[in-house]
Length: 158
Image (tube, rainbow, N blue to C red; front, side, top):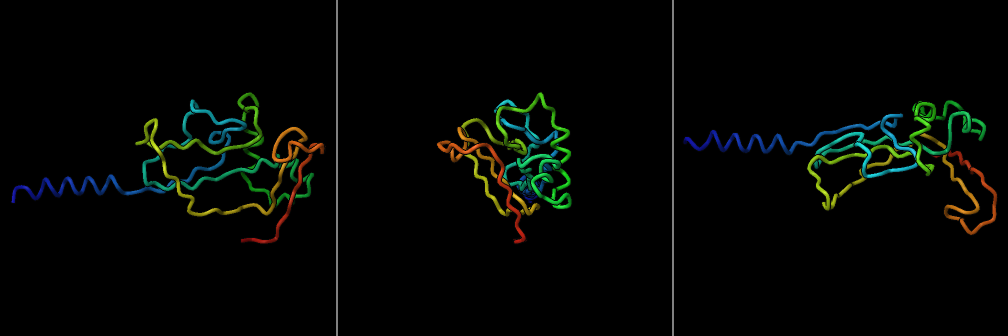
């Protein structure tokens, strides 16, 4: 009879430790990295194994002004786009063009661990996309085409 309370305490503590939490990581000037992703960057968020993180990402199609010039309606541009393009410090931009939300750290992970990441859902909050082409880089690096941005508008709201 004396063993029941300690055993209950151990089981209760174990069940609390295994409860997963849900987090949201928004794309802001302070939670994105622009043009680089290095091991020394402090995490934008730290979670535990089993937690779920909803991560907001940002298109690299350009600033609001650039998008409007390409024919995107101002009302179709996500509200957070302007804040990142205007608020991210120019001095912190890396050599690449991609804007990456994160990094996300796993509290229990150690160097050498293999992590399983499951993408549960992809939600699109913009009805446009773009792809940049240059004659010496990207998918068409053998092409002699000049630089440009192709913009595609979709009415398909899947």
